[in-house]
Image 1 (cartoon, rainbow, N blue to C red):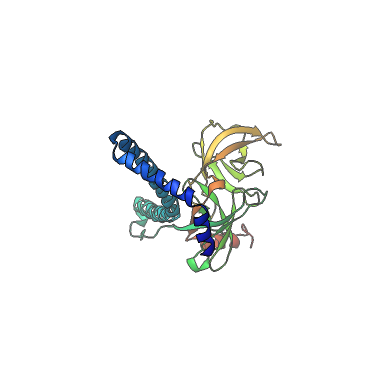
Image 2: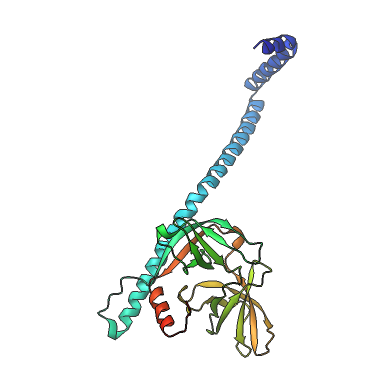
Length: 280
């Protein structure tokens, strides 16, 4: 307090000068319509900019909750679509008219990415849903635009997924317009692209063709979007072609996903194991 008083006494002249200047400006503006209108315009611009920035900050803060709500709605829509699809397929089969088709084969659970790596050869993604939420190993993961990966480990509240950007688990995929299928593999280079391999050389395809999941697994249903064909190249064996696929999912900005559960997965696995087709 003593220092403040000393500062005021030491700079009395300057403080008085600024006070008089401030009062003079107020008097000039209040008594001059032109200057007052200019002042109001400037003040409006300044306050408008402040409110705009404040609104943008508030929108950004609320964006996380908005995205989570949207993913919940997407999950509900996906569950509804597959329920109706299952019902229509059942009604189309005259031998199963009396079968219940209320339950869908697949269910979708929204989750949020809490850890994501894209710079390694073997990348991983951690999600905020675990066994307490009904999540288990070998469940699929997709974004709002395309396929993401497969769950490989689960704790009570979290799960770990291997994404497409990891060559450990090739995903069974196909070209949508001709149904030729093969493994989708990432070469460890560009996070935007993967390669659909082991396709016969004689198949016809066009740049821009859509690549989707084949449905030949217990993880993903058929027809989920993966990407588009942008190029092709011969494999070491001249009998096969590899298609370069631009992925729909942007792994660098991935935040919200859906976890896919195949209700009949264990039954399918047990059948394959009993025939010695699938190892333990």
